[in-house]
Length: 430
Image 1 (cartoon, helix red, strand yellow):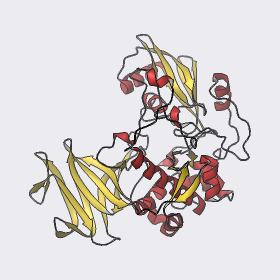
Image 2 (tube, one colour):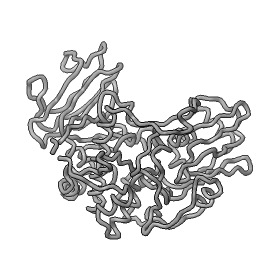
Image 3 (cartoon, helix red, strand yellow):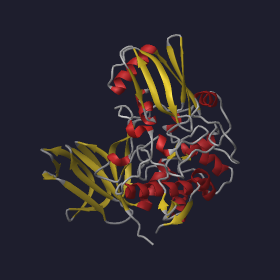
Image 4 (cartoon, one colour):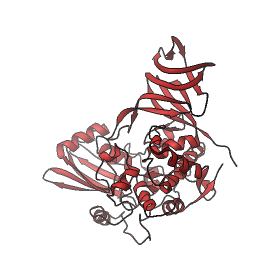
């Protein structure tokens, strides 16, 4: 059996940081508590009239906590905002590339207490919380290990495609810590959320302690999204060109049945423009409150949704978001879709130039001031305007959080939920 790892979580970066040590910590060999402000001066951290390259505040006991002020959550998403957040574990401050980076060093199981109550409500059903504890633990440990190993490429049209707008985004950009605290990795908002239903959260983590999903002797890179829209997506259509047999297409329903090939444009249009039965096709407020925190519930339509742009609005938006002047945008043409109907490549036709963009997050990023809910959408142009009709919220790979919440309410165990979405079995790592 292995020992429990410690994870380094990047919380924020700025030139000025304010924090409160709620109980006694130790820094530079001295006990420290109370409120503090630090700033970047001449490339070093200024604190108590001295200058440092790095500071580490270590807790004197396991219940010690600190509060970071003005943490940005929902970075670049439509719910972006700042809030004060409370964390356990050690507080590390480092100067990197002209900014102070705040890193929380914390044991994995304590990290999970926050993640599963930040990614959803701490009031979610026990089986859902247990399922999410397993996949969040699996994703974390898998990606930390995977970052140190060579990736196995597969044959794909993207391996020879050199367009600057065919790109994807993943955790590899984090060089100074293991994971970030925002949606880019997993939501981690300290003990701020977990306090709502702390005992249930602790039970979910403790009863699955050390459990990870395994496939063919390897810890699963267990991805998840808010709402798949009825069918899940394959990993390599969203990120790098690697195939994982546990991150494949499936119908979000049981018993499973045949479903259309949404890579075909006519089938995708038919699917997206209707509202087929699926676990995640629900408006039950009791279930949605388990997944959607207060700011998430500002999003009301996500299983099926619409966005309207005038031709001028869309042209301006694409120019600002891509940095490329297409002129007046005349057409958006689907080029390639994944198994969930999500667009992998989209052609933008303008009066000045035409270009293909992808993958799914780049499409979502360029076609919205924040992000579109997903890239599973159809395009209709009428009366000088564009209407995007879409399905789902997020990339759609792996576990569908709203679908899993419905399964929990229907009496499925966390093992059954995991088997449905990944086809993989759990194993205790430590």
